[in-house]
Length: 163
Image 1 (cartoon, rainbow, N blue to C red):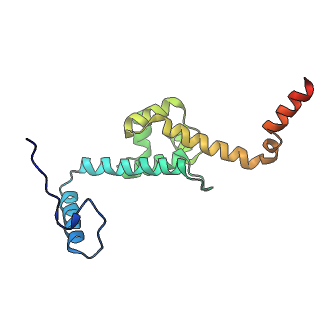
Image 2 (cartoon, helix red, strand yellow; image 1 turned 90 degrees about the horizontal axis):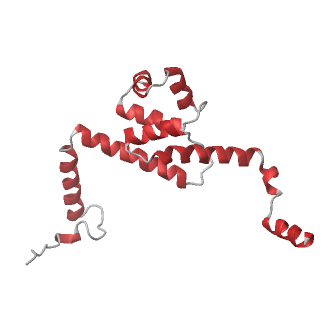
Image 3 (cartoon, rainbow, N blue to C red; image 1 turned 180 degrees about the horizontal axis):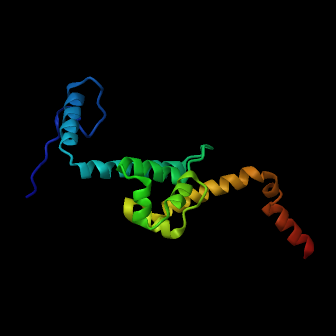
């Protein structure tokens, strides 16, 4: 027979609670106690997961402010406290090429995306999708009129007139 689990008082963890209540204070104390007990490795994994979510949020957002994949890489290296030269050497890149990648002068290729995905526990396509989003936005803003002339209804109309 399964053991019954009793709900905590004031519905802690299952319902909303008001700030300043005993339940909220107890919940904060539990979280603080758990966070203090985390190892450095656990903290690092949490920080990398947070950055992964920021990257995914960037992809999902409609904001016009561009953030390159290289900028995210720079933040990750800073979080890990790894020098760019050390990282470049580890992944087999010249430091100047890594610097260009971080500044947005160079793009991330599929090989690097796979390496970054493996190292930081992210999907490799996340890096490629960020880059693709930025390139598409640049194209659309630079040559908006060029693409505005294309219309499915016009294409269908032309096809019907030709038949």
